Image 1: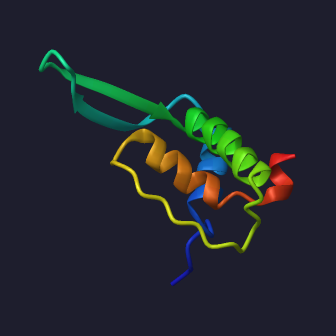
Image 2 (image 1 turned 30 degrees about the vertical axis):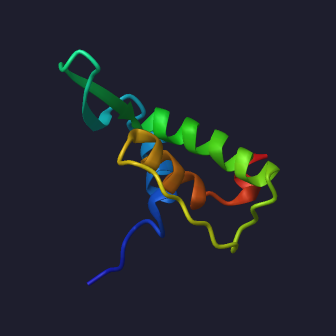
Length: 94
């Protein structure tokens, strides 16, 4: 049995952003202020781009590869983007 093809979520998203960038892979449903359901989706490209931007922001704040990072937030697309950002190597965001 072979191991996983990707070492972490960021590696998977990086790969998929190149091979299938416009595939909508996440859909989050929330209840709007008017009581109606609202969908918010993310494509591989969006997860990659937002993850890269967040990784640069974390780097600017002094967070380096190997540092521990705690995140407390609701289950929103930004949570997944933060998970992607936390797995991106610093060299890849420059």
